[in-house]
Each structure stands twice: as C-alpha cells, then as structure tokens.
Image (cartoon, rainbow, N blue to C red; front, side, top):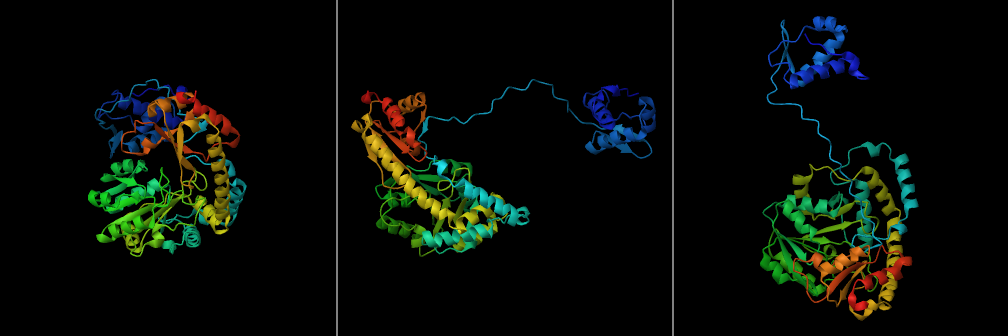
Length: 466
C-alpha cells in the first residue's frame, strides 16, 4: 500500500503533493511498469484524505502519461523507459556579463545620447497610449504599421529625393535582421558582394545563412566594378554616400559604372546602405543611388540607430516593385519584429517634424564636435606623428599614426588606459599594414569636458610622443 507523510507537504495543495510523491516512486522504479495502483477509495481511506484528493492526483498522473486507466480494472503504472530523475547537482555560479564603461570609447556605434529629445519622445509615447490604446493591442502587419511607413515615405520624398510608396517599405529590428531576410529571399545559391574594407559583420551574417559572399576591394572612388564583375556575385551591398570606415563618397562616374553592371544581367541588384548619410557638413546634398536608378534595381536600407539612439532598433528597407511581390510571396509569414508602441511613437515623431529638426540640430552639434577634436589633436603631441584622413561627413575619421607599435600592442595599451579603440584593419579582410597604425576615431560620444584628457591618454600610448 502506498504510504506517504502528508504532513511534509508544507503549503503545497494536498492533491499536488500526493501526485508528486507517486510520480517520484514511478520515476525511481519503486512502482514498476504494469503495477496496479490502489483504488481511489482504498488509498483515500488509507491516507485519511478525501476521495476527490486522490482522484485529482490520479488525474494529473494520467494527463502526464505516468499511469493509464483501464475500464473496470483501475489505474496502472506505464513504462517510462530509462527516464530517471537527474541528480541534484549544485548550480554553477554564473556571473552576468557587465558592459564595460570606458573612460572613452572610440567604437563606431557610439553617439551623443544627451542630445536626444527625451522629453518630446516621452510625451509622444504618452499620447500613443491614450489615443491608440486599442490599436496598440492589434497584430502588427508583417511589413510594419502603415502610419510609420507613410511617415518614412514622406520624409524620403522631402529629404532624400526618393519617390516611394508606403507599400514598398519593410520595417524591421535592425539592418542585420533585414539583411538576413534578403538572403533568405534570394536563396543560398545567390552570391553577395561586400565592400573591403567595410562592415565585416555582413560576411558573418551571410555565412550563418549559408550564402556565399565575396569581399570586393575599394579604391578612392569606392567599390572596384571590374573586381565586382569578376567575382560572379549577383547582389552587392555598399554605402555610396558615406563609406565606412573611409568616408569615401562614390562619384558619378563610378555610380554609372555600377548601374551598368547591375543592368547587364537579370537577377542582379544593389543593396544601398544609407547609414549615417544625414551627417554631411560641407557641399550639396548627395542623392542616393535609389533616386538615380531608372531600372528598379536598387534596394534602399537605413536605420534610426545612429540618427536617434542605438536602443531604438528600428530599421527599414525600400524594395523595388518586382522584389516587393517576391518578398510578399516568400517572407510575409515572418511577423514584424518591432512593437506597435515604438512604431506609432516614431511615426508621430517623424510626421510632426521632430525627426528632421533633431537631425539638423545634431548636424550642427557634430560639426562643432568635429572642429573641437581636430583642434585638440592639432595641439597634442600626436600631431607630430599622425595624419588625419576625413571627408567632412559622418561622426568618425581615420587617424594614421607612425609608430613602432603593432595594432595589437596599441589596443592593449589603450585598454590599460581605460580606452576602447578600433583599427582600420578591423574592417578589412587583409592583414594589418605593418607600417604604423590607423585608428578609427569616432568622436560622437566623447564628452567635451574630457577632450583634453582624452588626447593626453591617447598620446601617452605611443612611445614616440613621450
């Protein structure tokens, strides 16, 4: 007869404790497969509990498959094979990884957070809660809310000279997500071409989806089209308005060569990444390739991570009509990865002109920031051993330093000085140049009251400055 000390159950319901006791006996082999359990009335009488308590315990065992009921015969233990309760082992003491806060971080994903109009954003969020409370609970369309796609289309028409229908826009949580959807849509047999140097993470994403990719070298005009043709790639990803990390702007001659390449064969497309294009400080507006395309061969991609804040993981792409139909047929089963709450807020932020005004303020701020850091470099001992390469755009520049140190030694010395830096070779498939070291200096997130200390610490890394 099954006997259990029910006084040990604590706050657990009686039927639940009885169920757990019988289950453990089955798992541990104390109750063998095929063995008949006592009837509900017999066990209830033996344990001095109600029949309902035993009935509920047996019902749970039956539901989970530990016992089976045979009509007019009762409950029998079922075979559970080699399943056994795993031994209670002490859990390893795992520490949550902490994000290291450096004295200064030159990494390219840093921006000036204190200039984000948080009060305006919070007010719009509260408005969304009050005005769109029912809509917030509905399923978001696969391509994103119409309100946000309409606001983006209007902004592109006014600020990027792009004639776009809201239906052509796909909203996603980051450009990496959208890039992955592109790879799936085109299929594993499609080869992607990527700028070298450039955004190396795209190569890793391509590999994870099983797509072949080719690194294509760049020259002073951008991607070399002859090398692109020789690669056999069908899709090319590039940033013609502001190449990272060189800052190169693709001139019209190279753009025409690129259009000739893409139009030469069916199935070829250009993915234009217009990241960071808003921040140009001299010269006239440079139209995107999408605005110059006459054959619907350009896919336009952009993100709000740099122009607003990195945590706002909202990006979008604009598909040409023939690819839009293909995307709907093959990718529309994916749910939109951005919440309606954020999409409604951003749509309002753009439609009411706050986004455009914010970008204009940030252009002025970054122009001043750039002048201050260039002046600080000129006054630093670094000026004797370095040369600045910058193109009056974006929020970074290249600093070529003539030093005996290797890039690995420079990075190690920087970490010792509580600084995080990136080198030009980090974005290239080619080995680092042994003659000196080229740093990628992102100045967007550097506090202005720290500039002097930043230059002092940076100079102290190099023995030539001491």
